[in-house]
View 1 (cartoon, rainbow, N blue to C red):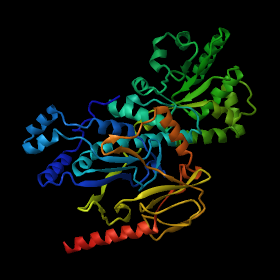
View 2: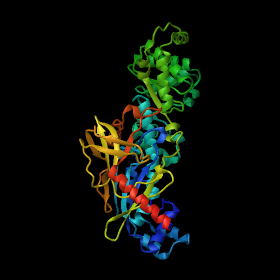
View 3: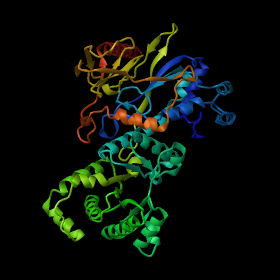
View 4: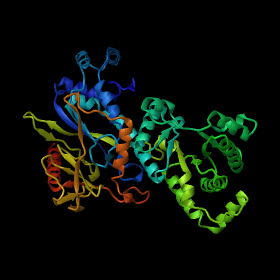
Length: 512
């Protein structure tokens, strides 16, 4: 699906004014290098799941100015006729290398490198950022949720709370890559092939004269997939009614898929539902939980279930609720039934509204065809960019990430070779890397001189790839509180090179 709004005018106005300035002084075809990266991992974590490459490819392939767009730009009475005529011939002729979609992207490591004429690299900045930042944020959120759901089934229910139609479709796809198993968004299901899922609303129950009638109607319509929403009136009575209808279905050779609880104490009612479903002989029915869930609430539900069932007083409360003595409850049996429906907190990014991905100039081609590095200097060391041409490799041990290493292009980094890494954010911190058994090069060519050389894999392959890559992160680096740092280091040679560039830039600034 190609979005009709994914075109040359999907840019900030200042990109066009800069392009016009470059054109006027005949600098517009000078080749430059820009890189995309982010500084701080979202959701107080250590990583991001890189998503958005498919849309970026579509954008660059179709990047043209139409006559209608040029006519609009003329009405602004800002740009020269020569510049607007020049835009009629515009297309992307540059090169681009990138992480594969679904790859783990660490802070400070570039995910995309664009090598192109200045006007081309400048124009695409805004679109590139919007096409990558948001889906990467949502895929990362989904990965956090799936991890804390302990790989239980997670359904994305966020369409009605999403930031518009484009946001909903983008987020549904990104969520699926990041770890969700299905979406309620039928349009996303059609366009992307994502499994769709859902149950009925409270209004369905309220329409019928009583809850049993509503459940019976639904079961007759969906004899193999009836999922009953049990909290419209009274949750315990709703569970009783759902069990009654499910047992009737069983007698007819049918199977109810489960119950959904969307309010109240989700820990307590999950345990009650488990006890009742076990007593009723309905082992296949699932307990679907929703109600503004996120990764922290899901982790808390698991922890509280495990703690609650060990307490004798809690067992007495459960016994009083169901009407028979419950001597023991298996926490893992309760948890094994759970399915999570996550909406607002996933589809919007929840407490974090955006990913701070940036796109920075790192090199300009000189008259001899070499690369003159560029650096952005800041009073904050973490905001000083990594200038010039570079390579990034990933060190692994036992299939787990040890560190990402930023090095000069000609440096050889191989398993078995000792390596000293310098923390780019705090150069006083150094680490010796020697106990790693594998080195991976993360970036692959996508465009070469304007030609697409990469075949985007199907969505399910992207999802499987993301799952495999996220599993290269150790558990201690994925926990909610105080996750262990995933290291990014510069080699000694690259660090010296960077410092030379920074010192030179400072000197030029002081002379100016």
